[in-house]
Each structure stands twice: as structure tokens, then as C-alpha cells.
Length: 155
Image (cartoon, rainbow, N blue to C red; front, side):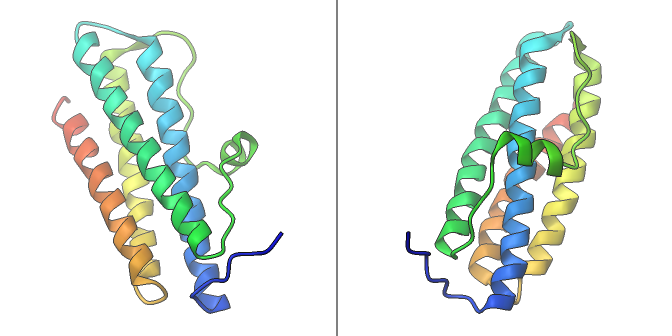
């Protein structure tokens, strides 16, 4: 099978590939944890938070697809396999069982804040080697920061 020829030199492709793979892992795990919380949520604010978690999941899934397709465009194979995500994710796992609404808000403030911080590092890392990828990561970060703000506002 023929490999995709990258428009980037080897060094730039390595830096950008690492940033995109890290973003992909964060986004996949965030979407999975969003669904886990969505299914197990309880509390007075169930309805609104239930819907809000679906917004996070939809956004993370769409952004993960964009990130993965950018990687392939550059000749980098994205790895979104469950084992890879489980081994590489830096997002703390959710507790098992029912999750109280106030604890879900606090946990998603924490998770989104950490992911936003890593995304901003990736934005900086891709500035010189590939401004096109940087632009994509900026847009993804903007999506995440909007969710981060909305969860913080519920504290």
C-alpha cells in the first residue's frame, strides 16, 4: 500500500504528528467520558447537564475526525484504537456508578481545563512547522474553551 506523501519535511512531520496524535487521544477520551457521565448522571440539574454532555461529546467527536484527517493528509497514521487511547490518555478516569451532577460539573471543569492546557501547548508547538495544523488546533481549542467556560459557570 502506498504511503501518503507529506508536504512537510521529516522533522516538521514528527512534531506535527505528535501534536495531532495527542489531540486525537484527548478528544476520543473526552468524548467517551462525556458519554459515560451522560449515561450515569443523577441530580437536580440532570436534564440540562445531560444535554450539555451530549454537546461536548458531539464536538469532541467532530474535532477528533478533523484532527485524524489532518494527520492522514500529512502522511501520519492516526491511532484511535481503544487500547492506544487507554494507554496514552492523560485524562483521569471517571468514577464508576451513578455520578452526582455537581461532581460531574467539577470533574469536567478539571478535565476540560487540562485538555485545553495541552491543546494550547500543541498550538504553540505547531506554529512554525505547520501553520495549517496550528489553525485546526486553534479552532479545536476554541471549541473546548467554550465548553470549559460553560461548565465553570455552573460551579
